[in-house]
Amino acid sequence: MIGDTIVAVATAMGPAARGAIRVSGPGAIAAAGRVFAPALPRARAQVEGHVEVLGHRVATLALVMPGPRSFTGEDVVELHTVGSPLLLRMVLDALLEDGVARGVREALPGEFTARACQNGRLDLAAAEGLLMLLHAQDQRAAAAAVQWLRGGLADAARAVRSTLQDSLALLEFGLDFDDDDGAAAAAARWTAPLGDALATLQRLGASLPTAASGGELLLLGHGNVGKSSLANALAGRDVALVADRPGTTRDLLRVPVVDPENGEVVLWDAPGDLEQPDEVDRAALALRQRLAGRAAALLLVLDAASPRAPEAAFSSTLPWAGVVFTRADLLPRGQAPALPPEVAARCPVDRAFVTSTVTGEGLAALRAALCRSIGGAQVDVGGPLRAALGAAAAAAQRAIAAAADGPEVAAVELRHALLALDGIGGEHTPEHLLDRIYGRFCLGK
Image (cartoon, rainbow, N blue to C red):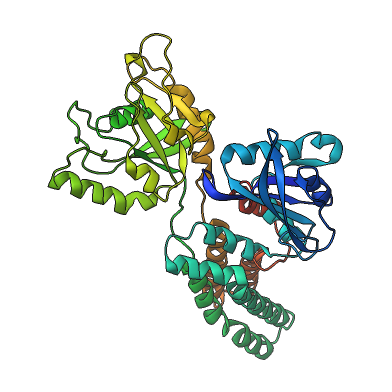
């Protein structure tokens, strides 16, 4: 709720050179001051200092942005430090210590953006533009997102709304006159602009992305470590071809995995890395490289008895969602596989899963964790704007068609069009639209 102070990691999941924790609210400067030294000023500033973790000082940069000149319109502090997921979690836990008493809590998904809208820093069209920019997959999508974020396309939507309001006012003016001459004159005036308004609504709708991203994982590992068997076991059916010969998988296979309580995630079963790939194998790996951009993250698959990570895992630009050990049933009883040092440096221990497709060990826990943490990232980018613009365009089209049948029907349709556009430019917004917009953002946004 507005009035308390919220905190969250504001950078992408997985290891990185830098990571950021965002704090926003009336107690932001005081809260950040509990974990950061030296003392933070009340004025806008960039302060070099440190946070202390496990008795060691870690170099950290603090950005102090007092409200209302901040993203949320509230006092905001960002702590930029080493991008270790474990380090960031420990700093976050320190910020949340005694949080109830101090009015500090972890942010909900999209809550920073929600506060920016509620404090007049963004309208809802700009918020949707921010989400579109976060998920843009090409230059066209990025350009459209920037237009929404900067308000250009929202201005166009507001202009259409104004046109619809003018047409409705003229139509209702005509309804007040019973003589045919007055009604006919008014009808000509309110129908004329609707064609242009309809074309603008259709153009704005066409500028939005047509597909959602996120919620998809690339299975990456050496050949014959059990990726296809793992995909089949998690899906609960035989989807991928399984054989003892390395290099059986030559294509990318999309495997939906559903957990009744935690949602759905999509796995991409991909060709594995081979010691001596032939020409066909190299072509398959090239295909994997081209299509890997569809995934939101990679899931590293290691043989529990011989855990070796392929070089592609370290050169990939995708974040790591976790590590899965396969064939745990081949280990001596009671023996746990160990993360290779280079893998442990990239992935926290709590994101490592030990599984066996023979005994079923660890599969339910892995399925639930993936669907909960990765499947939840699937978003309908531009969805609320697309629905609003589509409904407005359909209602405007019906109003044009109804002009000859009677102004009363056309007036009803124009009101429907205006109602559909509520919220796009900062006007009155239904609560369900707010929930749809903010709920699709990840934590820290």
